[in-house]
Image (tube, rainbow, N blue to C red; front, side, top):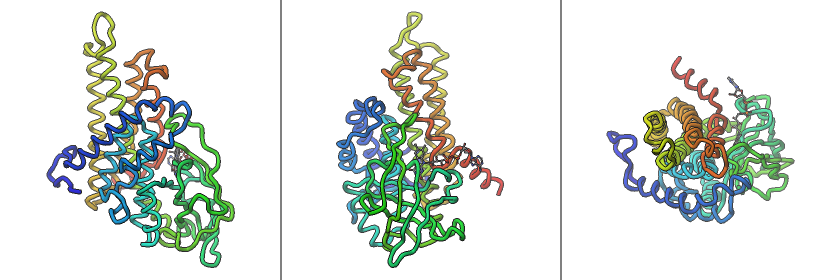
Amino acid sequence: MSNTTSTAALTQLAEDEILLRDSVSEFAEAQIGPHVREMDEHAKLPKELLKQLFDLGVMGIEIPQQYGGGGATFFHAVLAVEALSAVDPSVGVLVDVQNTLVINAIIRWGSDDIKKRYLTRLASDTVGAYALSEAGSGSDAFAMAAKAVADGDGFVIDGRKLWITNGNEADIFIVFANVNPEAGYRGITAFMVERGMAGFTVGKKEDKLGIRASSTCELILEGCRVPKANILGEVGKGYKVAIETLNEGRIGIGAQMIGLAGGALKHALRYTKERKQFGKAIADFQLVQAQLARAATEIEAARLLVYNAARLRDAGKPFLTEAAMCKIFSSEVAERVTSLAINLYGGYGFVKDYPVEKLWRDAKIGQIYEGTSNMQLVTIAKQILG
Ligand SMILES: Cc1cc2nc3c(=O)[nH]c(=O)nc-3n(C[C@H](O)[C@H](O)[C@H](O)COP(=O)(O)OP(=O)(O)OC[C@H]3O[C@@H](n4cnc5c(N)ncnc54)[C@H](O)[C@@H]3O)c2cc1C
């Protein structure tokens, strides 16, 4: 896949990037759009939709072609997540976790054997999940209680993971556990765990405020034996796998947030042109025009931050600060724009017959997962203070 040159504008896309974005957008409008409300209401993702996403090629965007994937870039994944999230941020995060966390970590840290065994499945029909958080360790992720004890040619994992996106749909899980709690974070190790392994079960699914069709589940590991061959990276280096993957993953959340905000603005533009008060369309009022213009400007600014962070990552340049900035800013823009969209719909914005209240509920998660806004500020402050 080709990339734009370094002198190109950030939003100037290469032909293959335009093709991907437009085909995913068309798919989302036609195939997901009609089901969004029902999926939200029932907090469920139709099984057929998963198959469609694999057929569309968005479940293995960066997977090298030798394993059956798209062989494309991180930026392509960002475009796909943005396009899907404009219609349904729940589908956006499913695809985001698959690509920017699970596949990304395996490509970077997996042995040839792990790549062969898992990338092939992830590219064709299997959903993945990324399990770091626990009930007692969120922002302080390395304070995890999950333990792994060496046992012959493997490890036995005991612990519980909480809040795991895709928990319901996934068959492959990257699970973090500590092999040597006395060594602190230097004991953390990443393991490839499969549904069906003895001692591993997917527990309760959360009933959430937003992104309700995205499953968020507890994982229970009770004497779960995992072969050594399933260690992702090195023993005691799981903290690096976690940090580095999440640094990149949060650009994907930025993409989810700009997609979501763009979707809300699109609804607001359409509605304000149709809705008449005082004898004219409400979009004819200058005050409304200014609100819409400000929202469009904020989304554009957020998009530039997201695209820049993604392009820096693909170029192999440092992007830590930019990634944190894109996530915090785009999630705040998403909250503001979706809130404005509700205001512009008036009473209709407050009811479920119209799409904007859902997007507002969905926006809230952007400030929480893959590092809360406070944690992004901590990262940015550390970088700028030196
Ligand atoms: C829908 C959903 C999906 C998720 N998906 C996944 C997933 O797939 N995999 C996974 O591993 N995890 C996942 N998570 C977990 C998510 O990453 C954590 O919820 C998040 O990191 C925050 O952790 P916490 O909930 O324990 O909050 P806490 O860490 O307890 O934070 C509570 C508050 O304290 C603030 N705070 C904490 N420490 C500091 C500090 N040092 N300075 C300033 N403020 C601070 C936080 O900013 C926040 O406002 C998901 C969560 C949700 C809700």
